[in-house]
Length: 323
Image (cartoon, rainbow, N blue to C red; front, side):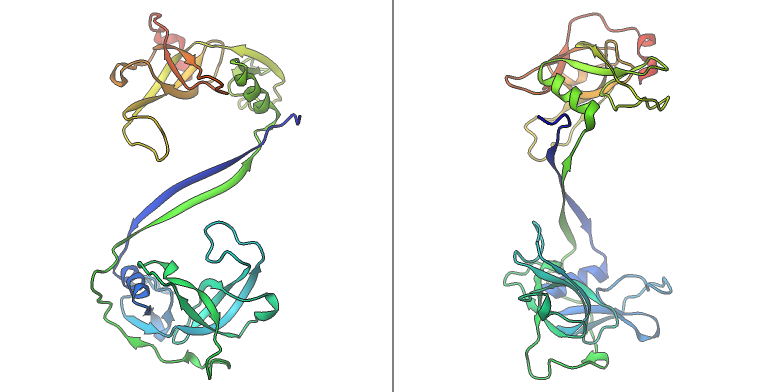
C-alpha cells in the first residue's frame, strides 16, 4: 500500500447570473439562429458583443447582425474531449472571425482530424436542434463546403454587418452555467496518517518541536515556526465548540435537513480547531464552550457529526486563543 493516499474529487456548483441588454440580445439571437455583435470605436464590430469598448472602455449599445460563416484565425487540436465539452469525438478548438466581424469567436470545429484544419479555412455554424438562448445553441462549427465558401474574405468578411434593434419576443434575461472541477487530491504523508487513524476512530495531530503546539489536522510542518513536524500525538476524542454558524441553505446532494450547525471544535490536547457538524441538539441551543464528542456511523471512515457530552460548558479562557 502506498504511504500517501489519493482520491478523485469533484467540485461542482451552478453559477447563476443576470444579463444586461447586450448579452441578453446576443443569447436570445442565438436561440433565433442570429449572431449579433456591437459596433465599437472606429467602426469595429465586436463578436461576441461586450457592453464596453475593449479599447476605449466607453459604453457601446449599437447592435449589428453578422454572418453565420467565417474564417478560422487560429486553432488547436483536442484529441481527448472531456465531460461537458461541445463534442464527444476529437475536435479542434478554433477562433472564428465571422463575416462582418472584426474579432474572433471561440468554439469547436467538427473535423475528421488535425490534417483537415488550417488557419484561413472557411467554416460555418452548425446550429443545435434544440436552442434555449445559450452559447451551446451553436452546436459547433463545420467546414463550409458551399459555393464561394473558400477564399479569403474582405475587411468585414464576405458580408456587411446589418443594424439590429436587439428586440426579440421572450428575451433571455439570465443564465445558469454549471461549474465543475475534477481533480485527484493527494493529502501528503502527514494527512494520510491522519486519515488512516480516523478510519480506526482515532484522531492524531503532530507536535511542533519548537513551539510544542499540536496541529490537527497535521500539515507536516508548523505554520507558525515553519519547521517539520514528525511526532504524532493522539488528541480528543472530546472537544469544545469555539465558534459556529447556522446553515439555512440546503446544499445539492447533501442529505441533511436545514437548519443545521457547523462549528469549529478544539479537540482536547490540540492547538488548532477543526470544523465539523453539530448534531443531537437543537440548532438554537448550540453555543460557544459546548463540550462535544464524535459520533461514528457504521463503517464510517470519519466522524459523521459531533454531539454534546453532557459536561459543563468549558470556560472561555480555556479556548479563547483558538477562536
